[in-house]
Image (tube, rainbow, N blue to C red):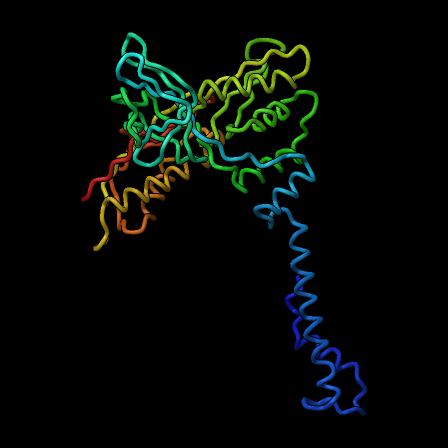
Length: 351
């Protein structure tokens, strides 16, 4: 905005305003007297440019973005959450686990949320919580499988289901999207935008689709995905239902469900550049595909065959590819209105 307001430009303008009868060449008293002023004025313009940039919400990030969004809309950044799950513990009858005892996976530990003892059946179900916030607690089935500190009478531990409800703090991108959704869409009197905003206000919700009149007059269906753009668990579905039930207009009947998964298998054959390892290429491809999946989930109604091919071709170390298939077909995958794409497997072979 003020890029042209440099020290030299300001100094020259000042010199031009001084009568030519006065010597103003470099080294004179006049020249030396205006130099500090030029420097300070140039810095003032730099500061003005910085301040002006803060007037544009798109240029803000972190705490500054949080403050501006909250001031204008009341929307607050969703905090990180600690993943919770149920584990099955086997051992001797009447052996106990206490609140605060630890069970572990290879990447992170989980803490028992309750005091419990093994019954006659020889095992017990225990609710546990990840010791760290964020997606680090999202571990696959069977990953929680040992006791970091031995507990007398307990022999084994296992999580029968994958853990999916650990969420990182809401990103600047997501917060900004909710901000614009609030200021650009008229959410009034329980219309579609109102229900969508309500759903997204619940911690753990990544996106929502609203289906009005889905089961007759006065009915509204809210389909959600979690913050990781995955299938929402029953606990999150119930949280959304309870929240909206308290704020919805009188007379509306709401139904909240999770999106259904559309599993996607990706297979292809690639030519690697010299010096590149398949594991590195495969991991980077998985990372980029997952980023694409999250970006388009609940926004596009298909997984693009061309987009996946473009991602693969642009992975560093890939010279070429052939026989790219999505679910064994060389075509895009169409998604139903209530479906969310889930990358089930990614397999790359070398030509």
